[in-house]
Image (cartoon, rainbow, N blue to C red):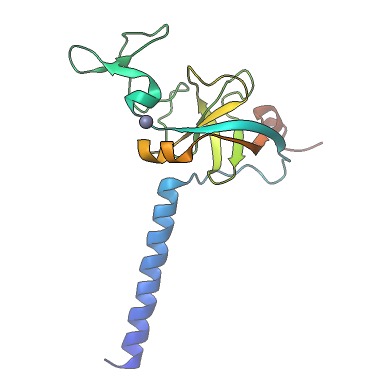
Length: 164
Ligand SMILES: [Zn+2]
């Protein structure tokens, strides 16, 4: 094999590894970014992780084996697994929060998790506590429970576009 061929193969390998890396990163991290013109607010909140499973999302199977709400006003009603309270499907970057504090559409930056947006609510998610979506239960558990400083872009700040 000539050195030219080797160099070409090496270049091709770099491209494949590079693209593969981006793809994997996107699968676990949200690509969402708030506009740089809007200055974030800072809050100290408790963060936990969740996944679409029955344990994390409070659903159970009915007699027919269909997922249904386990409690609350929708108890017994059919539940679409993975669908958030705002109707969107949950994905990495989906955050559940107390929407009286962080309304739907609030963008957050959480160290170690990255950017996310409030699109969900949870029975146990009250006050300054946010729940971060992970694809698997083990990843959600691995996140643990932290009190940490997060950056917050409230919808009212985003609407203003940061123009004073
Ligand atoms: Zn789970």
